Image (tube, rainbow, N blue to C red; front, side, top):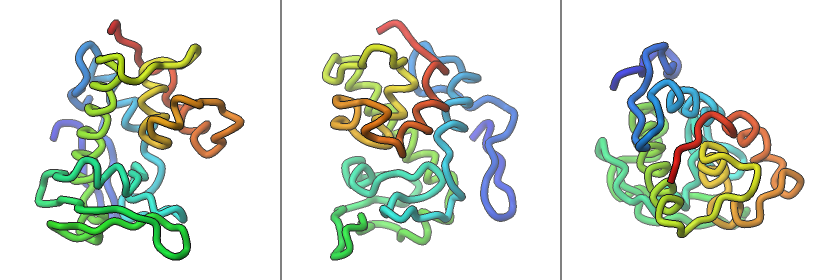
Amino acid sequence: MTGLRIARGGARIAAAPLPSPIPGVAAEAWTRFVRALRQADPGAISPQGFLGCFEIHPRRLAELGDLGDGFRVATAARDEGGVWRCDFACGTQAGFLASFIAQYAALVKSVRGHYGEVARGAVAIPAGVTLSGALAILHRAGRGGLAGWTKRKLPETAALFDRANGIFEVTR
């Protein structure tokens, strides 16, 4: 993939722009957006159970199903301690966490799906939120998080929103 460079201990998003999967968004803007969404090392699991460098919610991975590159998530649920877990039907969680390429492919599929909902008008963008900001909120907090968006209500999402909001806006 253009713009991705695998480095020892993880991956770096190289200087070469990544092609944008969203119509009307320049590659440079998409690359900035991807960098803004990167929150951890590729092998990380957040305390809530979010996976990888983009902290993708296990429930979202289950919604996406086939993640490509030999990975498919069948189900996601909270465990006894309230932490999200997912069951891989193909591949393993350890394999997914070891693959920055698979995590990036899952991110692209997820964002493409959220963009489709926005473009169809199925999801409304609140005032003061650009498309990139809305996609960041949808990535972190889902449809309900965007519908009730306020920085005070979701402080963990606010930092992600602040990094991503204003990177791009396209005419829908």
